[in-house]
Length: 493
Image 1 (spheres, rainbow, N blue to C red):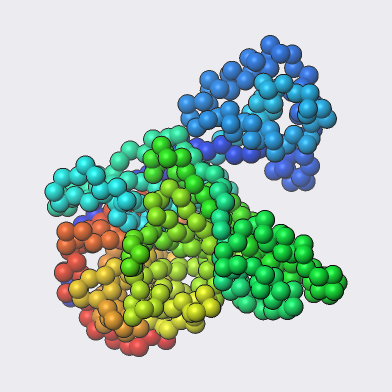
Image 2 (cartoon, rainbow, N blue to C red):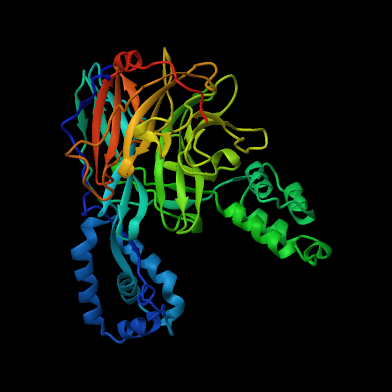
């Protein structure tokens, strides 16, 4: 049996080392034996005369000012972070403070190593388009020095027909700013339940909090705990759990005049400090209207955790943890709507099988139902999803990935029942897309991988990472893809 006609588009997104952000730099912290040299550096800066200080500051602005938004504000922020190292910080004039900030800053190229693992959703702005066109937002995994991943974006227009145009991605980039977030008590309770943190201290705090609360209120509630509770042996650990579980949620907002490709979701918590990986975006629609949701993997250098993103406009993002046995591994992908009143997600909780999990009333994602296990030669090592299910008349179209000999990744497909997604209706017997000779070399060789596709004008538009080095695009007629599927040969497991 021949497979469906997949067409690779003659367009590739490649890593651009000129896409940079400004980060805090503290001399000595990256040494084998870390010791800060901050105070000595600040002392040397303070000994400069006014003329030399002004010349160095003007030179920094001239070299870097057009590459970043509001560079002086960043310099001032970085000065504030290290000013406790200055022996006479109150005596420093504004120019010296900015120069200190400049010396404690460095550029980081967010995609200098790789650009990969895209997902594609309908863009919030559909203005100015011709008939048959659709504007889409593409999320990207950006990898820079030290294998640090962040989430970036691109704009593109599909159609008319099979045309594809990706907009330029000019800087300057911005990582946005943290903004206040009203935390959810039910998510805090779910996080505590997941680690079996159930004692008098946690119960008292949860009982005192409203459904939505801010960090200041949590601090006050903890401070007002009765002494006889705080004196219990388990109290310090419980308080630490309460603070850690609460800090996993935060919000980021980008300037109103920034374009989507200029926005970078950058690691902001200890759980993310080594990267935000493989965001799977979906446009979720219910009776309250559309909202953009995504899942991604937070990595701290040793452990992974699943996080959820939510945004109405792709400018303000709320980040919250996901809890429960269904989300204890990579590769969680949300359905674009509820099914039978249930919030559903694809997952790979056991590390090698595609499963279906639902959100329980306790905000925990439940133990998954197995959908598809490794059994064909091209996927024997493990299988997983390549993004959220796509709704079609024939059923939920699920793009899969499978890993075969020599750790070669290829993309396949399943079809789930529209009303009972626990039931696999059909599967593609072979791979839909596998790395060809032009795609096998890169940062991680022999890989094609996607985090989400969509349907427009009868075509499945599939963005994919090629060997974790660049992003390609392919299309396939949905009808032809469904026609090439067969009944599943074996039950999963």
